[in-house]
Length: 269
Image 1 (cartoon, rainbow, N blue to C red):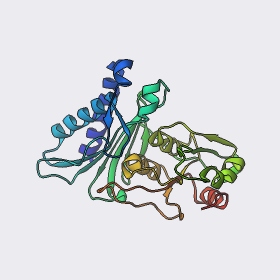
Image 2 (image 1 turned 90 degrees about the vertical axis):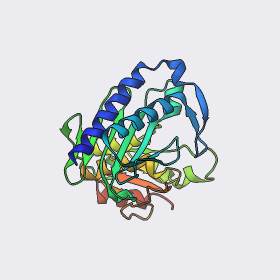
Image 3 (image 1 turned 180 degrees about the vertical axis):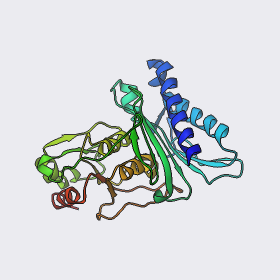
Image 4 (image 1 turned 135 degrees about the vertical axis):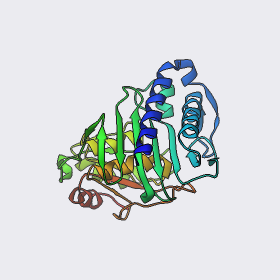
């Protein structure tokens, strides 16, 4: 898997460098709607092109699954399957809100549990999270572990509240969770927020909307699990969804089973 790790790290660092060279006018330029109906900005296409070129350089055969494009096959196609979110937090970037990231996951099969290597980079400061299956998770080269927080009233949790009127009553469903947690955050870049659970900066990430696509959390999920955390579905089961074709799912990334139980006891599913 060493070649996967080198590829992920090199590509993400190059994305960071390229984005830093991009002017604000270029970043906020809207190009089109992507295949999921979301706005595509120039910054998304710049990052995706870089990933595509890097993948061609590293692999004779591969399949790329990206937010901005259809499935792209290099040579005979995958495995490996390269799952990419070029820019997570495009709206943040376009508005000048300083919180966005890039993520890459390498899978040897078509499901979330087949991810064997991944990385997420903070595009503001270049901090990079990396993980290999059964080899641990790292932030800037230092091994990371989830927190030991087990009680919700002691927890700092991240909750995605962006419902856009599509889920009537959603905020009410999670109001008990928000009221009981010690602190609540919402940054607008889910991959980075999930990684913060891995590093112990937060204790849980909760998104029960069912909006997130598997490519949004493929990379960060491995990082959390390798840091000793759990990645669960809305039933409290280990999350394992399709990467190809892209699927959508609720997701809870959490430091411990006890904290997960408290979270579930304070939400209305």
